[in-house]
Amino acid sequence: MVLTGAGISAESGISTFRDNGGLWENYSIYEVATPEAFEKNPALVLDFYNQRRRQLHQVQPNAAHLALVDLEAKYDVKIITQNIDNLHEKAGSSQVLHLHGELFKARSSRNPNLIIHHETDIQLGDLAADGSQLRPHVVWFGEAVPAMEEAASLVAHADIFIVIGTSLNVYPAAGLVDFCKPNCEKYLVNPEIVYNIPKDYRVIKEKAGIGVPALVKELLQKGE
Ligand code: NAD
Image 1: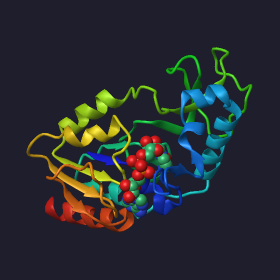
Image 2: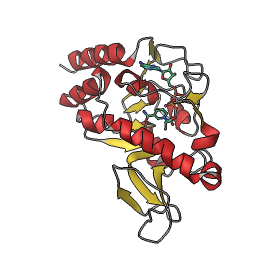
Image 3: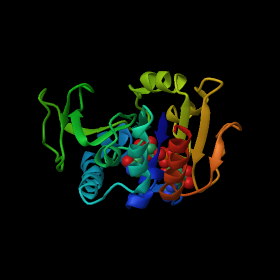
């Protein structure tokens, strides 16, 4: 099992969330990533995600995303990602669970289960099949995380758990680090100190592009 956060996509050119003083691409999350923000200023919120979606057409997976694909040669690798980008899929990972939604999907603002594939801008007035305004298929702050139960069960059954590029500040996702069974091998890859990580994780204090390929190499050799 692998849990990834914004840090794994940083070397692909996508800004993380908290690394610049709590700003994500120069916006306050309260202006662009809450249901209240969408109610108050839907055009601003749609524009923010339209920019992120356009950027996603331009960026490529990096060495960390690619190394996780190599790991599938010997392990049954399942990725839980907090990211809304598609870089794990673009790299070729076969099992990816998006906890916080996906930029290339849109949904009804009335029915969270009415989801469509959508790679272009969403404008005010673009409607879902039920006649409501289309919105990004993204879990905003204050909203439920429907995939959380499945994610917790996956982590609880893991033999190896690798946590990459997350500050562990966003709950409930951050709580997943405590769900491992006692004999699970646990790794953390992050160039900065992560205060919430339990003491029994082996910490690899490197950027994902260096630390993940090195760990993958080690795990593949171990599996021989
Ligand atoms: P975060 O921004 O809170 O934390 C990023 C972490 O990545 C930090 O601990 C930082 O030290 C680490 N980091 C920075 N550069 C790194 C690198 N090169 N290699 C490895 N680690 C690196 O991110 P989060 O914990 O994922 O929480 C942010 C939330 O915002 C997520 O829930 C996500 O939905 C959303 N978000 C998504 C994206 C994306 O889809 N790429 C980008 C920004 C934010």
